Length: 356
Ligand code: SF4
Image (cartoon, rainbow, N blue to C red):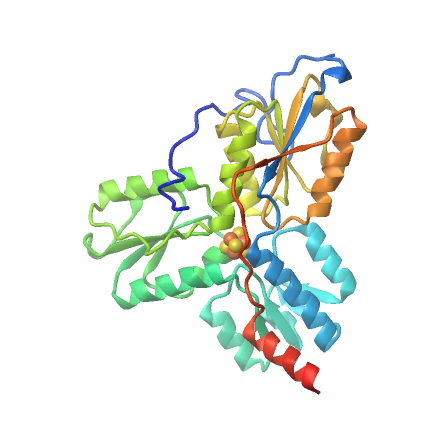
């Protein structure tokens, strides 16, 4: 599916106007208090949801590295943005660090799915670290696009969120050529060397609709704006946003399972509200659901971000069942079958270990 195919805006206004959202909440519905539990009539489950191919590969990379090399295996940044995944891997011997300076010389370090800049690779070489690069191939694709546009001497407008690891990694591929654009409000302030040589790229996990708005605003200023050769917002992000729209338009409540630092999970809750959900809450797991959210709620829709293990969704469904909701009905909007091979450096060591 292309960005353009996903473009039509879905109606519905953002809920919660005038209300102060609770932590992790994007909107607060006006509920009919006291509705009997017997009116809890439906639970709809988005499909696809949860793990994407890049997250699956990154998590398996750390697991296999622990099996092969033994603990500790260092991981620069969170391997994927999910606190449960990170704490599970920590319990098996992974050590998560913010910067390579924290990794002992000669140790093994895994780079996260969000990618790193060439400067980080260089630092690893200088410190004689054994590196395994679990950058998602779809992020690597954006890195290649950045290098190519910079090689052709374009000014590159990278649509994304300041401080996100993926944005830092992509920006590092073409320093001096890339500037960050966080939304339409940034467009008037863009300064380029040549308005006829401007290209755009984006973070892989943005809202499709919001990104298109930003691109449109950029194109109005720079009519010769060059598009990336293919969508940067990845298939998993697009599919999960389409799926959440399917379950949101008449939902009283949408629960999105995902961590607060997961860009694609946060976007899902926003998209749910834009698609017509009366309320949407992002939770790390069932323990964060508040019973008050269910007051007066007949239908609940559930989905999860691309870095979320299915067990956490099952926990949410059990929570709902215990409170009188029926079994969930899956709503399918796309099939996914993509699998990425493990990083070549890890495959090589796994082959050598098998032969040995
Ligand atoms: S969300 Fe997309 S870009 Fe990110 S790891 Fe998953 S497939 Fe790759």
